[in-house]
Figure 1: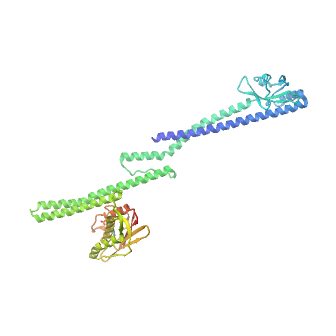
Figure 2: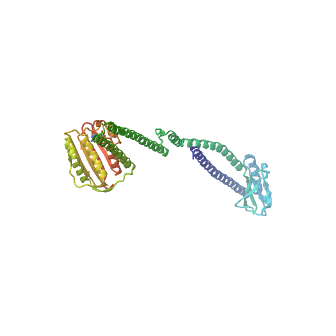
Figure 3: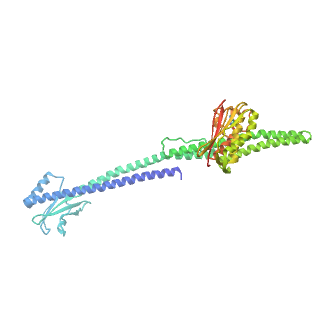
Length: 460
Ligand code: ADP
């Protein structure tokens, strides 16, 4: 569904809710108003009825008559119909204001009931109003009836309806406009999301970002996460491109050497020993390339989670002792003092060969980057759920700007010139440790030395 149709739906829902709310509210107001006006009219008629009842009791029909003619003079706007009938409902007296000729009080005589305690409605012949008559029996058995027209009430309610429509129609338009503006504004990030996604699909450029509005709502969160995902994808793609460039670059030198050796051998004299020597250096070069490619594959497998780990309970102290033994000759040869801090037996569930690879790489680096006369110290610590191996050297240390990048594949630091290596050791270390749910860490100061460490959960 396009954002346009979503926009229309939001607007329709917004306006629909507004209109429904307005209709419900006005209907309730109308019903309450109508009831309360009707109650007022009835109670006024009732009090008039009681007044005339008292007047009749005091002075009979004559007093009622004179009172009415007096009222007609002073209260021209508030009018009543008054009827006095005999015990058999035969009209004795009827007073009907001149403006009310459309009502027919004569009909009261034809009714079989007098409607004491209720209201008799006599509809008008001209409009929708009615004469609302209340009745009471007089002490002498006659009947007193007072009627009031509902015209004023009907007119007031019609005015209410007209005013309501006058207000309701422009307000509905306003709510439609408001709903449209509101939903357009709310959906702006979604539209931007669509535009950016389309640009990425069309151009393949992942460096576009959507501006965050800073409102802190869910859409803002979505935009922030989308931007973060884009940054991550961007970093990964850049990393992959760089790796590919580096691999191509790093393979070119041994490939050229390989070809050069073969070419020289081909152009030389037919001499078996020199052919053998050329073939053996070709094998050496291709072994290096194979080793590099296999390490790159290992890193990729570990990073993408497809590396098969043969997890077993292994003795970390045992592995450290073995590898330290193995490297003691290299260290001795270089004049570097290698010590392993003895600890009690520490066991961990992990892939033996992979952990050997990690320790060997770290130890190899420590000796490689330490000048003769320096020292390398290996230690291992454990608490209830984690073990931690630390390899500390007094070597060249790493320049601060290199530290964040040394774990990248094929990255070699500024201190690595003239030191052999391919820049893959630490990449593999990090990938293997992370595949074991562990963490790698480095603290280093240029010129003073480094401490590389990794920690593993005891049961990974
Ligand atoms: P390589 O050692 O083959 O260059 P690594 O991936 O093992 O590749 O290391 C990456 C970079 O980290 C090295 O080029 C070097 O700059 C730095 N480095 C690693 N270990 C040490 C160390 N113990 N002391 C100083 N620098 C180190």
